[in-house]
Image 1 (cartoon, helix red, strand yellow):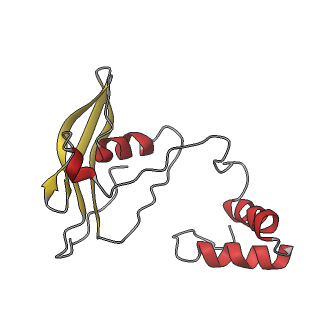
Image 2: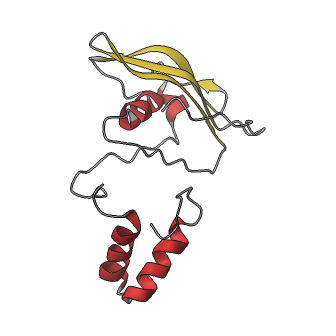
Length: 147
């Protein structure tokens, strides 16, 4: 998680996370996360199971409870520091919690899973659903948008 590179903040401020570090039960579970999200932008964090995605977002949203502890770092939302429990600073920050029943299967290509949903929910043909998946994955940094 710590390989996320901060971008240059916009004048509207947005979300800035600097050196976010979380401990749990005497162990470091998130180390030195830096990121910036401009107002109106969305950020998706992806990674392996157990890599600290949910813990990082809990730290950003201020949803920290024992044994999780903010060891260091700052979370600033529209110029107000928000990681240490200031509810007002966290308004406008949302987190979509994991639902294992709705999660992507790591053993099936993500494009195939997206296409399957497009076929079932939108009634798309197999060809159109695959094209939709490729279009949706285009902005991502997949090595191959056909995934």
